[in-house]
Image 1 (cartoon, rainbow, N blue to C red):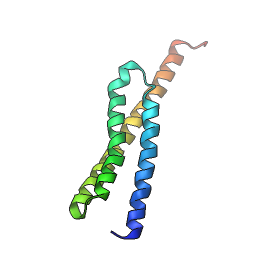
Image 2: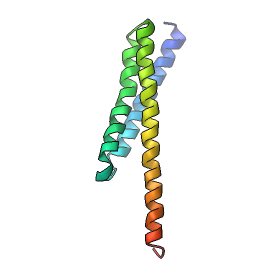
Image 3: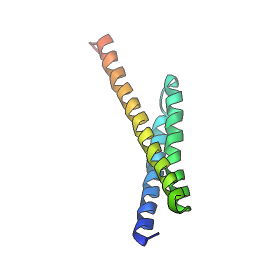
Image 4: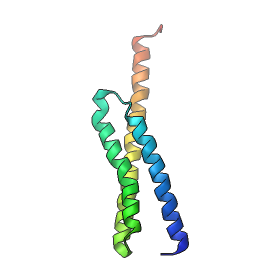
Length: 102
């Protein structure tokens, strides 16, 4: 593997670890009804750096396979986080409808 590609992979892995840590810290605060979604966030967040690291240790199509899994997990994580963010917006708007003077 070229030095440039190896460096890009290490940067991607470092960023994935940072993002996973931030995502996990965020979902530890979600209310009980959303715990199943929080669990999915934790699994997807941890999958990204794990698959990047495993792909780094492989070669050829095997390497690409793990990097594709990492990419798919990152997309899954993005979707879950967007859903949680939207839920909070809808909850806040609904609360305002119920409590207009507050």
